[in-house]
Structure formats: structure tokens, C-alpha cells
Length: 238
Image (cartoon, rainbow, N blue to C red; front, side):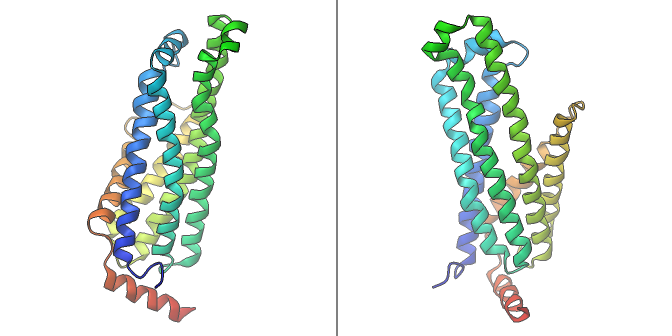
């Protein structure tokens, strides 16, 4: 029995992982950090984090789960799309591994403000304003580190979109949306790196694209007959 003997089931597993990633990322990065961190008011940020320490820790845990789930997602999609173009599929796997690695390293900056505001040694050594100044750096570093990881993830999205467009077992519209998602991640990251003004709603593009792909994979999977035909054609070309 080969790993891809049941490609539709495999696709549904990938869809489930993708939905978990999306849900946990929205919770960790938008709900928790968006609710507790106010970069324009560090005193308020300190009070929020200390008063909601358990919520902040749950958000950090959710962020770690996102990073972990990215790896099996990348591997499963590699197994599904290597019948389209094995080199392109492998390249996509490399980029999501790089993105997950950067995101894992950056998780230090997620947790650092909580440590700064609650560690007894910090409380004894620094006054409130000094602790707020110390916490500001990892908060900013996290934003930049996350955007760096998203540039790699954006390449992954664009490559997956290209593979979908070349495939015969998934709708071409999903491929277009995923390429646009990758471009949206790049543009938003460059905006932060170069300190350009915010672009309203740009991150709704990957949200729509990735959720559409995840739901399609979970509900419909792939067209097994077309997947097998493409797999046989790829093998015959090798």
C-alpha cells in the first residue's frame, strides 16, 4: 500500500490541517494579540497581558500548534502535487518548511512580553516604564519576524496555486486565488519592511483563498480518476 493510494482521503486530511491552521492563527495572532497588545500604549499593554496571562499563554500555544500543523500540511500537499510537477512540489515543501522554521523561532518574541511583565527578577530590577521599554522590542521584532515567515509562506501559496493551475484534479479558480494570496502576503510584508502605509483589506485575499482551498479539500478532496491519470502520465515521462 502506497501513501497516496487514497488521494481523496489524503486531500481531506490536508483540508482539515489547513482549517486548523487558519482557525488557530486567527485566534493567536489577531484575537489574542489584537485584543491585548496596543503598540501605541505600552502601559495599557502591560496591564492587559498581566491581567489576561492565561489567555496570552493559550494564544502562544495556539501559535505553536499552527507551526506544527504547517509541516504535515506541506508534506501531504507535496505527496498530492508531485504527480503534477515533482520539482515544483518539492520547492513548495521547502518553502513551507522554511516558513514554519522561522515562525517557530519567532515564537520567542510572542512570549517575551509576558516574561518581561511577570518574571520576579524583572519586577525587582526594573520599574514599570523600563519593563514597558524592554517589552516593546520583542513586540516589534515579532511583527517583522512574522512578516519574514509570511514572505516564505507567500511563495509556498503561489507555488501551490501554480500546481493547481497545472493540475487536472482541482478547480483552476483555486489556483488563481492561491497565487493572488501569495502576492498579497509579499505586498503586505514589503509594506511593513519599507514602512509604507497600510493597504486596507489586502489580507482578506489570502483568507478567502486559503479557506476556499481548505474547504474544497475537506469536502470534495480531489478527482481521483484525474489524479491517477496525471500520476501515470508523470511516471511515464520519467
